[in-house]
Length: 71
Ligand SMILES: [Zn+2]
Image (cartoon, protein in one colour):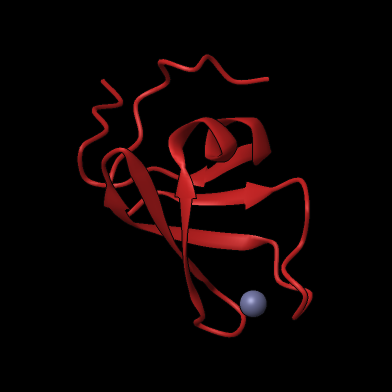
């Protein structure tokens, strides 16, 4: 499991443990706050997840957004 404090940035693309009903597993972060806004990369549907549920559901970060400094 990721740290609950793992920074989350708009533009991050994540893979969730549980696929969307459309079959998509990749989600792009479009909003960061008390809730995390995600857009399914397969069907473009938008959902809001409480941050805690998001952190629990993330399997891995596929791509980091602009906020990430990677050295
Ligand atoms: Zn979908």
